[in-house]
Structure formats: C-alpha cells, structure tokens
Length: 461
DNA sequence: GCATGATCATGC
DNA sequence: GCATGATCATGC
Image (cartoon, rainbow, N blue to C red; front, side):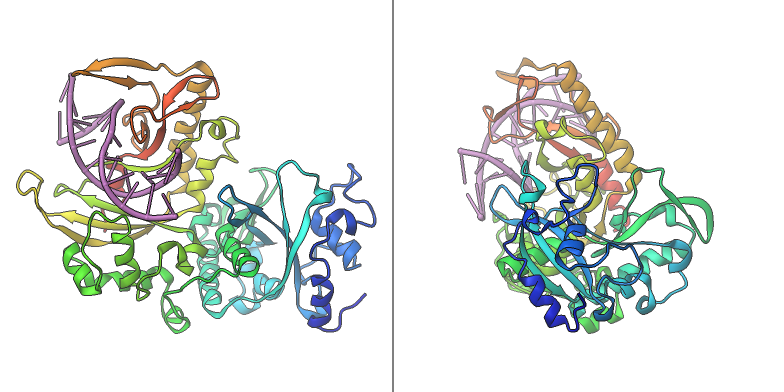
C-alpha cells in the first residue's frame, strides 16, 4: 500500500490509536520467541504493509516521513514521560563531516517523523501494550535552531578528531547516544586513529517527554529564546547574556530591579528571579520550555570569600532498593548525571559570617554544566559500588553519645572517599528512617557533591 | 576550618 | 506526609 498524501497516511496512523500490538500483529512476530522483532517492525509490516528495511531513506520515502514507534510511561505521581530517548540514524563519522546540516543524514532521514506513542507498563506482555497517540511531527522553528546547534556541536567534535569523546551531555535536544550491543562496538573516525564508540543521533528523553505531555496532555510550556536570537547565538550564550547585567549586584538589588519581592525564606525566591530576568516573569522553572526539553536543572551556589561553598551540594535521597537492584550501566545515578545539565547560579559573600552576620550575597555568574563522563565512570561509580558492597556485607551502624545526644554513625563513603561525592544522612528529623534491602534500618541517606569539588567546578565563573 | 550527623522550613 | 533545599551543631 502506498500512501499518496500525508493526510492519507495520518488517517491510517490515527486509526491505530487504542489498538494493542497483539491486535495488529498479523504475522505473530511478537508470539514467536525466536523472532526478535520489535514493536516498530510489527507496525511497519502488519499495519502499514511494507517490508522492514534499514535504509538511509525515510520509511515513507515519497512523503519524506520516518516512522517511529516509541514508549511512554506513567510516573508514580501520575504524570506522563517518554520512557526512552528516541534513537534515530547511526552516525557515520566518516561521511557526516562532509555535509552541512540541511544535507546531513540526520535531516534527510528525520525531517518529518510519524510518532506513534504506545503506553509501556511494567510486567505486562508486549502484545498488550496499547497505541495511545499518532502524531505527524515537524520541529518547531526555535527547536530546529537548537537542533542545528547540537548537530554542529557533534560534527565539530568529529572534525576535531574527538568522536571517541562524544557524550550526550555535549548537546541540548539532539544527542549522540551510544548504539550497539556493547561498548566494544566501535567505528572509524576521519581525523583520528582512535576507534570511537558507535553512536546514533537521538532526541533526548527530556525532549521526548515534552512532546508526550504536549500531544497527550496538552501541556503548555513557556520559552525565553526566540528564533532570531537563536540564529545569532547558542542557547548557552543567550543565557549568559541574560544574566550578565546583574553580575556584582546583590540579590536584594536584583530582586528590586526585576520586580520580585525580596524574601529569602521563600523556596521560590531564586527561581522567580531567574524566570523574571529571562523575561518570562511568573513562570515556574519546570515550565520553561528550553529547560524541560534539555533537562536543565538549576542549583544555587553560595561561595564564601575564600571561593568555596560552606556546604556540600545535596541531591535526592538514595533509594537503596533501586541502587542495589540495577547494573551500573543502567543505574539511576549514572543516568542522572549523564542526562542532566545543571544551570549553576553562583553567588558570593564578600565578607565572612564573622566579619558581618548580615552579609550581602552578590551574584557572580552562571555556568551551564554537566558532569564529565570520566568522573561519572570513575568516582560516581566508586560510590555506587561501595554502597552496593556495604549493603551486601552489612553497613556498620552505631549509636554514640555526643554531648547529651545520641547520634547514628555509619561507614558509608564520606568526604574523603574520593574527593567528589559522599553520602550523608538527610531526614526530616531523627525518626526519618528507611529499611535497607538487607533488613537494616538507617536514617534516610542522600548523596552529596563535595564542597571542594563544587568550588573546582565554578572556579572559572 | 573541616567533617559528619541532625534537622528546620517551605511547598506540593 | 514527604521531598527538597538549606543550614545548624558538635567534635576533632
């Protein structure tokens, strides 16, 4: 069957909404264990009636439409997310460097996508997954500018002979994700003899999540960068320029300039200053389109006059059941850092607390940062491994008297463990405990980045 | 001054 | 009720 118009194709695609893969799978690909057929292949073959191929041309070549069948999932809090990044075509390092964006393999194959979202549920048979929504997707113009920047970032790294150093954290919406059965699957690159891991262009999971929420939940986001700005400068440069006028002003002065009530007790105080100076006053940070799509999370840092924060930086509490049930490569903590960009908003005190207890906080600058892959693969992995070992062998939990109080101590990785990350209690109070997989009971624990490492990261701000 | 444990306040 | 960001308190 050949679809002559996109409307015709979409009519057919829409008719699949509400159907399960079992209802669609005419050739019983899914029932046949020896056939490793994917859900996408079932749709291609049984639903649209064309032969499965892996060509560089789009699936519906005449219409320039590429078919993508992709999972969504429901979160514990009821929201929807993309379950995965959307993996597109493999990057041929040798060839892609010869193109401009508009004749690149990425653009030729993925200019228009027919996205068919299905709902993944834990523990249910693939046959019973249901198609929820079919969408003909073309990139909004602002997104396309950012994707072009991302493509250039990836390609210029290959042109510098650094294809082996590519990482998903390099880019905002379009990523270069690893693709292959294992890490040994490598390819040649044109400007270095170093073999590089095989990678594919992909739309990041955070980007896909915003599409899921837009098309299925009608969720609206607010953007701060427009197309004409994005044609001139990178997303990071736009951010830098928006914050630049406030450097060396006190938090109080900035609040007054942007018209936000000065209230350091409010948890939304710094976030509301950020959205105000981005020109979208009143927008919650998780409703900022660029942040949601690129998975940018903000963190404030307060430096003491010596250039070091007084406190370490805390993250989520550790879900020990999860941390001990996953392999390193699929671990929560590894993906947390591989897939998150941090907008570090740096303030400094120019006096010590001793010199002046009412000291003012001055804005120093921002940094868009993601944790370097080598740190993730070494120091973060060490902490993950150590926690797994300690839980396997039993954590030493003691109760000792300090002053007139009893405190709980443990032998989880401390500040000196590797200079990057440590583990420390973080509960609401003394009785805020969790039960470990081995049955031990411990105060809730959190992972922290050492203050010395934070100082290091922002030393160039 | 730093390391480690404890816990507060806000907001959903 | 709980997660999160922030910061306090004690001991070396």
